[in-house]
Image 1: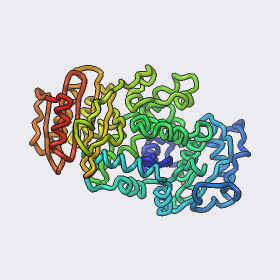
Image 2 (image 1 turned 180 degrees about the vertical axis):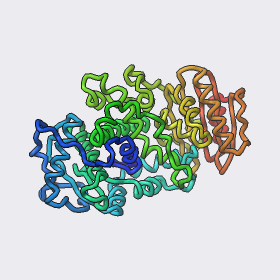
Image 3 (image 1 turned 30 degrees about the horizontal axis):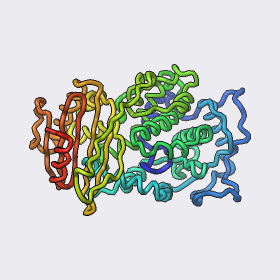
Image 4 (image 1 turned 45 degrees about the horizontal axis):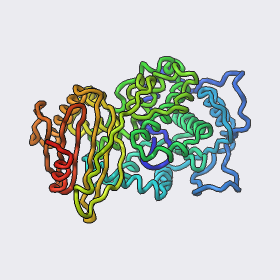
Length: 451
């Protein structure tokens, strides 16, 4: 799990259930014992951070009871063996209450995180991915309060597990294994450094999250059941689409928090055995897009996103307008956009699969008006039309039939809820404009030469 804009990695209940479902060891929930010749790990004894170690924030919770030390030592040793990464420093483990965990997750947000979340919230509101009055952070926290089992914080180099799970339960042990993997990833690859380098590229950031969580989930699956892990690619399915449609948590929020466990696992299962250093090869050459995650063959082929250059619109929009920030949506993000009105998972996957590249810019006016300009490029004109037709179907559902879903259309205009939308298909590209000021949307459309 990645709290959007925050450097935290977690085990969620939904992801653990998926792993447990693949376990074929009957009622015996004991993890397999480490082999007699497994490497020792005396230097990784679980302990609180030394008193003289400075930390950015106080550590909540309590240390594990002393009688659990050997169990934790064995879990570290077994996890290191499964992941094929040796600990480079002590692993610090804490027990934490459920409410305290959620409060801690929220409390880790610094000013940069808050700015990143505010930007994402603004874009998501404009695109209709979340309601206009929705608080994105609180939606994420609400989902996490009921789903989080544990987490790793690379800022303080400590992992936390909910203390109400029972110290001897398979859930607790599996959660600890998952978070130990994150600690090992951090020690070897510096997760914070990667985070800070790519966080402004939303699509690449999501792909990074997929790798981090997919790796941890793969190890926890092997820890639970070597038999289930023997053919991991066979378990790749549409799990990332299995959201609760009756929940008041928007689909985009659910999928962003849950999809990495399945999408990332499937990427690793598909390509790791074909790379010289397995999973470590992926960490040394991270996917550039969610397209490479969703289509492992494109990762192996190093199919890069197409460059998209946006025409600046601030001067055309007039006095008071300025470009605020820009980014990339990616294939995964466009799936979420289509899901606003298309429930057919297969159709959504097909329609977004031809993604070649995209870019968006968000403009703001002094009075609070907002406009987003999105340009998408597709692998071919037929791929662009397939996305376009699915997009029209989605709009038709959202507009309750007021927007025609005719495949012959090459442009569409829709005004609803104080926002105007203009979109057009041209060759292998689809252009989208959404704004809170109708006249400005029309002005932008004219500047771009939309029909």
